[in-house]
Amino acid sequence: MINAKIDDKKCVVTLKGIENKAKNMNRAMRIIALEMEESVRENFEVGGRYSSPGSLLGGNHKWVKGKYGGSLIKTGNLRDSITSESDSNSAQVGTNISYAKIHNFGATVAGQTIIPREKKGLSFIWNGIRRIYAKVTTKTHDIPARPFMVVQPEDIEGFKETLLEHLTQGTK
Image (tube, rainbow, N blue to C red; front, side, top):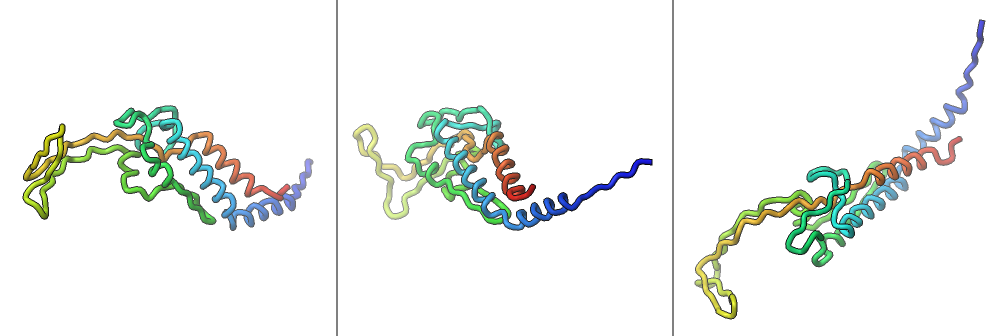
């Protein structure tokens, strides 16, 4: 006959420690939020690092070249608007710029007809000649998707390490 005795006191203490750490994830979530923000900013610097349009997972695709080349940096407003937030349960990165969604996902922007409100015509100088129009219709534009709100697979591995470190810190 074989007798086995399992002493699970250390296991219970370790699990209790992990449970207590899980009640306050603020520090870990703040680190992850800052890492996500840094990753998104890096996407601007290298001209895109995405897997496919619409995906949140990064990859090795670069942005389609547009009017300003392959970059989304004309003034830097979009890049500089990237912020991160966190609380005890979540980490997020985002922007409050209204045109961010169009650049990230792409879109077809329909042409518009512009009619003057206060005067009889719209006045433009084109090739040195003043032209007056009763109305102007703009062209429809296709804006290619240039996903910048993505994180890389190696970032996700870093997030896992941060969470594991936080949860197991001080437990043996």
